[in-house]
Image (cartoon, rainbow, N blue to C red):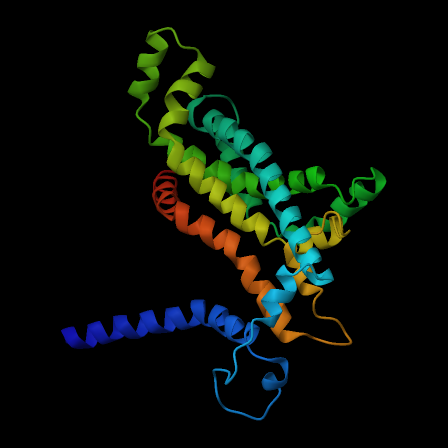
Length: 278
């Protein structure tokens, strides 16, 4: 029976790798396949001739290459602004909900859980009307505030659960030494909370990078549109350049992939400790 279990594990792993890495491998194969070979009648999975024309076009200063890297820059701006605004707000909110006693605290914590299940598209029309009325469209800062409002419930909930695992004796000792609330937060909680902070930063980075529907409605100009929208526009009603689109997709995956690989251990530890206590 042991060999049967082992075979099941191996089979499950292979299926997992096929479903997760398969699309990326296939996209890379398309990106190095000549355009005429894609439409040829052939059952071969690998191209007979490898071409780097699509990558050379994107990195060579072509119009689509310029649009792609402008989209990457816009996505990075949105990520940076969202992190800059969102992380401090989530930290202070989480500390308040986990360590301070006040009327309505439990209600607010439960309300955070409820707001997580509200789909973003249910609020996008009211947001659009507000943005139009206040002339806030195509502005990275206000777009980032929308992202912050959507991530705030989940990140605050994770952080507050993480803070709840920190022994109260540390806080009490700091108070005895003369520290106020702000000093306790800055000197005690922040230094030992880097796993959940980095986990939250990674979650925000990945989700902001992959945003499509919100910026499509609120920030669709050339100056603000993120890379996800730019890549989708490589496919038009008149023509689809499969190889160029696949190459752009591979380039787009590189920044979040590198970030996820660097901070993956913090994501695991932060998520584990941030979910053990409600």
